[in-house]
Figure (cartoon, rainbow, N blue to C red):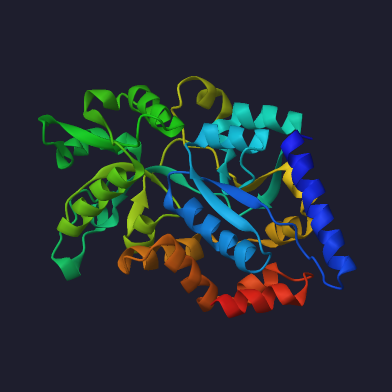
Length: 335
């Protein structure tokens, strides 16, 4: 155990002993719980929901550190960061496999069922939208194999002879995967690969086109505010095949586990928190719904977390089954 951790444990233990001697009680050790706040909204939201409960119910100090995927996971492994409520481990499978062997980072189970990701188009491109006066432009568009004949529907403003594929930022592993997919499918002949500068830039590109009723082809995933608000269709790809995935990537993304991840040493020192985190679970639909609420109401992450806790008391109280009843009362009072 690190010296700083030992010092904190000793200090907390002494404080608890003094309180007991004085006739008081000490339910929880004071410490700062640091979250890996990755660059997508759903993990930031779930971090805030858990952070609110830890802060108000468990008397923990909380901090949210903005990090990219791999550095954040490495931080959890080292113990510089304690938690993240979403770890898309299949996107960093080599690292995750080695981390499991080391045992310094622990999976607390899935936050929600396996999350889809891939290439999306607005559903009105395929089916139209009579309420908006939009006619179906690509009624036969079902899979990536159909894209060459519809490339003209997604023109690149800077190169109108080719279509534009909205990719994620260059720092994302999935963005390099998408680049390989474009080449493997022969679509780099028909589409320019546009790397967006950030998660928000990617979302803005999709939202801007959707609000205008225009076609757009983009990489995206669930759960997200975009897919909570807009009707989008995931294009089919050849079924996932491990051998193909390890070479050309010319197949569907593998089902992606979204795990709750924590530093092993932190869990050893906080068994009641571990019990709460293991019981924490949601669904794709619920997360999409809450993210859509945040977007439509221009709410902050903290405001949305509080709204969620007010709106779904039965759910979060179920997460706290087996805990000291004072925790529930303190969270309720905070709302």
